[in-house]
Length: 281
Image 1 (cartoon, rainbow, N blue to C red):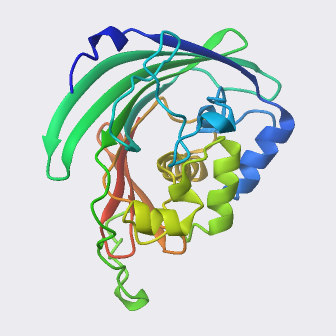
Image 2: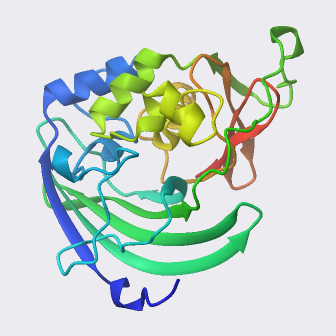
């Protein structure tokens, strides 16, 4: 695969409105205690969403990628797609009733061969404005991977009695993402990727052991943890990297601690694996 240079610099723009109803549904989905008109620092992942018609979706539920002048994402012929990392800068809060726009631009495309085969990393810059003010700048990394060769076996979770030692972390919250939470978050983000709601597809076609928790949902729960500890809209930056999948029905440990430059955070699975590593400032 090669020849993706013509996609670098390609842009797309979306418009949206943060209605009070959408904000209330976001809060209900993650069981947030937040109130008032100012939204939490993860709301931008629920705004200015791709709105591909259902007829244009591929077998995995993602929009088909086409080699066309009006296509934003390049037609990379690797079927599995995941949100691998984000570097976010929070510049201004987003309030209910705000008129929101997002301009996205493809920044880099890199090919790599790893232990799971061919990989293509696409970095996308997103600028989200609320009522004309730049509110969030994000560089998002998306990775495209080869099809799963078997439904083989990610490690089984540890038994309840073998919970990981979290004593080194000063912030700690444990929850079990339910199928209902995943369904609601898919609805909030207009995300029809079948690994989040179609268990047979997730296990048989993609080789996971269950329904996969969305990467941005895990990041949202970490940002919610920071808000519970520090107060609303307290962060100027948040950088995360996905390291392993989290699954519906399994405990997810959200943790954080102060560092010299800010806060270190993580989502940890029931067997002690790091699901997501993050830093904030």
